Length: 304
Image 1: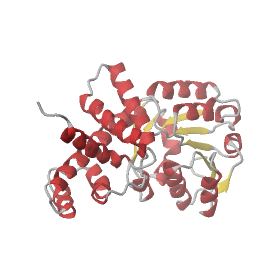
Image 2: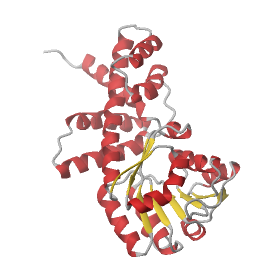
Image 3: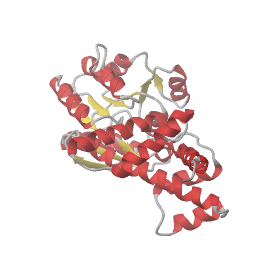
């Protein structure tokens, strides 16, 4: 399947947890996938699955008709797309730049304008779903950009995740992704809080999750992160250090919109506590450790 809607090969810049999951699904659907990452072992993992190694971002851009950018920071995304050897300056005519990282809506709009000025197409396509969810085809691609470009890229996007929803121009998808991550953060913390209470009460935690996920109290984050919290094991599906970046993007966007986010502000403080305690490389469910420390501090505080 070397040609889909005019796309002969697909490139990935960034092969971390999410990038690897997306690239793997594109490979499984029969796409030719060329990948690059600063960490050589990530490229090696892609090659082991049938992908092709690229030497640089410029190499990816010069050999593919669609380039998916899945990088951890705003600066790395901007450099990959607009840098001296970035995608915008090295891509072939007609290339579609598919930006899938969680960045700011402001940067998204600026990248879209800059890419269009180079005669290329740009799609704002963040993913709502953990890397494990994506690996099994769960989750959703939120698409922003020219509807005609979305339809051109749809076969590729749907190979990565079967549900793709176009929500408006570039920037709108990123705003909706931040709204989605607001709920991820609050719901994950709520799961940690609820299960901490159940643990302190001496309840059977596996049975508690069975009951909670079957009733009105259920949430996707309780389903995904409840077992981690119960077992106190936090293999990263979304690393806490990366999620801290997302929380700050949410807070910045909310301030710009004059939208109050008191629960997010409280959650950010607890996630930050877990981060400062050295848990940045673990899944964000590790916020339960911040609740444990909060409990210890309250017990040790002098009583009036």
